[in-house]
Figure 1 (spheres, rainbow, N blue to C red):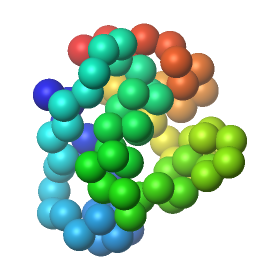
Figure 2 (cartoon, helix red, strand yellow):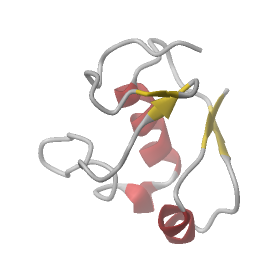
Figure 3 (cartoon, rainbow, N blue to C red):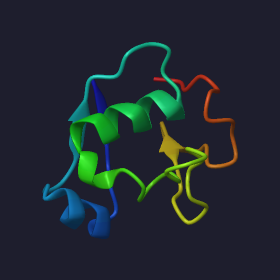
Figure 4 (cartoon, one colour):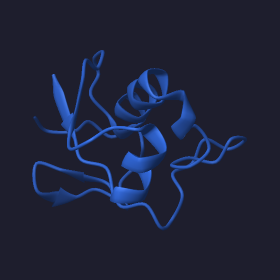
Length: 80
C-alpha cells in the first residue's frame, strides 16, 4: 500500500479527509501512483496531470520517501 498526501484543495475536490492509501501495481513510479490515484478518485483527472499529454502539472510537487522527485522522469522507479 502507498500512502498519498494531497494538498487541501485536492482533498476537498476528492471529498476525502487526511491521507489516502492506494494499492499500486508494480513497477512503482510516479505514473503508476498517479494512475492509481486517478482510478480511485476520477474527479482528480485533469487536476494533477494534463488530460492530453498526461504530464504532471508544474505547480504540483511529487515527493517520495521524503525526497522531491518532481524533476524526475514519471517512469523512474520510486524507492519504497
